[in-house]
Length: 137
Image 1 (cartoon, rainbow, N blue to C red):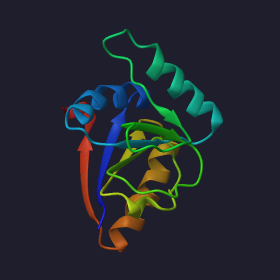
Image 2 (cartoon, rainbow, N blue to C red):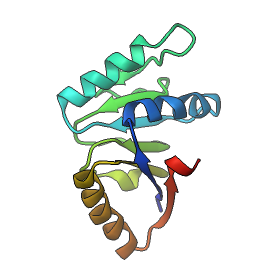
Image 3 (tube, one colour):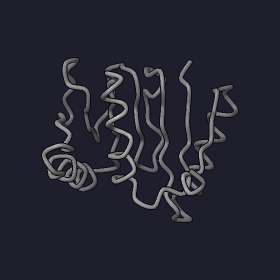
Image 4 (cartoon, rainbow, N blue to C red):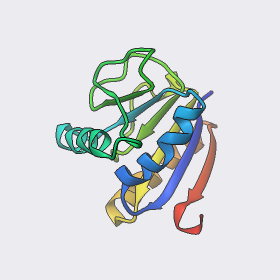
C-alpha cells in the first residue's frame, strides 16, 4: 500500500521540491513530479534545468525511463515507480502504483481546502498518512 506524506505550508512548491531532490538522487530513488497543467510543467522544467551547474536536475517530460531518476508529467500516469510528488491540487489517478506519494500543499486557502479533501479520501481508505508542517522544520 502506498505511504502518503502531506507537506503543509509550502511557500514555493517548486523550490521546496528542488530542496528534496538531492537527497532522493543520492539514495537513487526515482521521482515523478506531477504538475497541474502544461504551464506548471514548463515552469518546473525550466527551473530544474536553470539551477547552477552543481544543482541542476536532468529530467524527462511526460516520458518515463528507468535510467532517469526524475520525470515530470501532467498526463495520465500509466507506469509505476518509487515516489510520485504531487504539486497540482488534483487527485492523481494511478497514485497507488507508487510506494510513496508526497502531496505538496501551499499556504493558499483554496489549495488547502482541496488538500483536505484528498487527505480525507486517503484516510477513509486506510492509507498510512504522515503530515509535515514545513514551517516548523
